[in-house]
Length: 330
Figure (tube, rainbow, N blue to C red):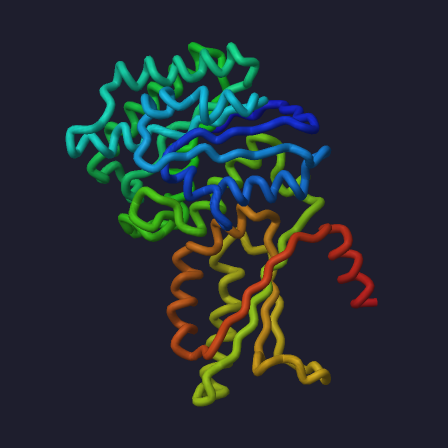
């Protein structure tokens, strides 16, 4: 699994993510690099740590090596995260992959040159080409073999390791029991969707110590509002309300679900009548919840009856939330 390390970052430090299209897309709003940057901004001390995404669509590890000086070392990074290798395997299906020896040599050269420039290196095992977890995706054996090479190079070069392949497969075993080939945490079996970006961001946040803080100090509130179609009956609304509340018993990451109907006198509800507050311990728990089969089943159930749904999430202090709850019950 991912190593636990004691990491100290100072003001002015730079973290560069070196990779392919997954990292290129990861720099966009909602991408894993963007979410990781937000995590640092919330929880780092100091927060003046620069995060740079150096991703290039189609890149294999030798391509990353070729542009290392220009796109990585020129930034004088304190850390380099090498999240690449998918194309080295994936492109082998059309005769453009990277053989194992060149993959090993190129990866080792990247690590060595980064270390020679004073940067600490975190290697990342390969992700997914298909989301089934029983080993039946067509390139699983190669992904496992090349991930073993990443682990060997990390050990040989005394660099750090995020074992993302293990993390992703463990995650998928929980949320993809039927073995769908894609669309759980990827768009196409390879590239991350919103849930996948949240999960991968959480993995890197934990590695660097920028998760939501101590487990009992922060909680995440997930606010959901429904505006039903005019023809939706009261009986249907009650059935859907019950189905939403049942998610607490079906998804272990949910701490609690509170529900109620609008009674505001301000006239600003815009037709939203039913509200829910789902509480999680962390963003990672939310990332497990969103693609969970039981949650997706509820989404399919409620969607035909909605005119609109509104979702708003925020992180707050657990102690403050508990104090408020106690005060309101006195």
